[in-house]
Image (cartoon, rainbow, N blue to C red; front, top):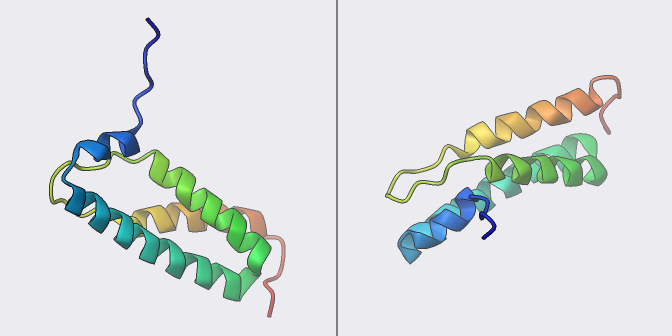
Length: 94
């Protein structure tokens, strides 16, 4: 038999439905705020890349199966670091 890769997001499906809904709602709000900030500063193309970085970062996180709140700001900071690495030589859209 082949072994299944462990995906922390899939593990969340075993958590109570209300917890999953709350986690996804707060993640959506944080991602939206991050995306809007990047759009305003660097434009929609960079914001698209930044959103992809943000989503890739949450894929690496361990999702809790209890009432613990995830630190979405950590995800945004990691994604912002990726944005900074790409735009450090390029002036922002003003």
